[in-house]
Amino acid sequence: MKEEEVDRCQIQNWYPKFKSLTIKTKFHKLPESFINYLIDDSDAMPNRVHNFEEEDDFQVPEEASDNEGEPPLNHPSFPELEIEIRESIETLGGTIIPKLNWSAPKDAAWISPSQNLSCTCFNEIALLFRSSDSLIHDLCNAYDSCTDKISSRPESFYLALRKWYPSLKPEMEFRCFVKSNDLVGICQREVTTFYPVLLNEKDLIKGLIEEFFDDKIRFEFESQNYTFDVYVTKERKVKLIDFNTWCGSTLPLMYTWEELEEIMENSRLSVLPGLKTAVPYDYLDVSSGSGWAQVLKIAEEEFQKENQSSVEVA
Image 1 (cartoon, rainbow, N blue to C red):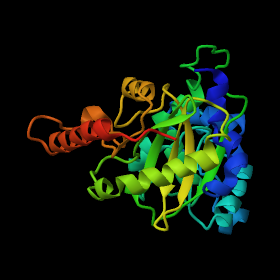
Image 2: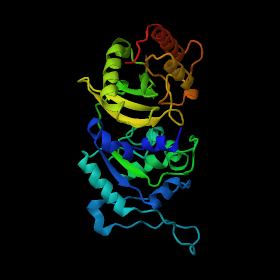
Image 3: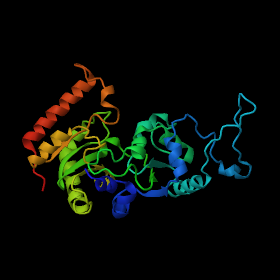
Image 4: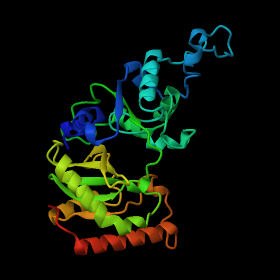
C-alpha cells in the first residue's frame, strides 16, 4: 500500500467528487493547538465550553490549588472553533456524527451520554475524540502500513461533521471490498447482532451494491485496491458512507485478507453477513455451545454455500 492510497481515503479528499452520493458533511480545518490537545494524554478536560446564551459573562473558573503560591491549572480553550462548529451543527439539523480525516470515534461511543456517536455541541465532540484510540491512529500512525512511508502525519487534520439520521438501521450498512478494481466481497458492517433478514435479502442487496459500484464508484475512485462502506435505504437506494484502504488498519470483518485474495484469484464475488467488528473479537464468547459459536457456525455454512454457488462479478 502506498501513501497516496491512504491519502485518497481521507474524507476531505474524496467528498467533493462523491458529494451527491453520500451524507451531507461540513468540514473544519483543525488548529494545531487542538491537535496537540487531542494527543495530550493527561486527564484534563475542558472545565466548561462556551454557553453562547451567557457569552458576556463567560469565565473559566479557577481551579483550587493545594499550594497557594502555584498558579491555577490552565484548561484549553478554542472559542473560534467552537463558534464555527456550532454554526455547522445548526446547518446540519442540530445533531451530527463527528469524524477525523479517516476515522469516526466508534470505539468511544460508550462514554457519550447518548451511548452513540450523535453530538449536539463542541464539548461532546471533544469528549469522544479525546477518548478514542482509533483517532490516535489517525493522528500518529496513519501511514505505518505504507511501503513508501515518508510522512509521519498528513499536512492537515479536518473535523468532518456528518448529518445524523436516527432512523438508520445498522443491519443495512455494508463493507465492500475492491481488489484490482473488481468488487470481490460484501459483508455486514455492524456485527454485534446477527440479522436473519439478511439471509433472505442477500441476493437483492448484492445486486443493488454491484450496480452502484459499477455505475458510481469503479471508474471514479482512483485506487485499484480499497474498501468502501455503503448504506441501503428502505427505498432500495445505495448511499456511500466512507472509503478505506485495502489491508492496513481496515478491518476485513467476516473475512480474512487471505480469503479475499483467494476470492479475487477465483474471480468470484462473496457476500456474507458480518459478525465481529463493532466490539473487539477477543471479547466475544465463542466457546462451544455459546450463542456466538452458533452464529459463527451459521455464517460458516453460508460462506461454504456461497463458495459453491458464487456468481462472477461483471
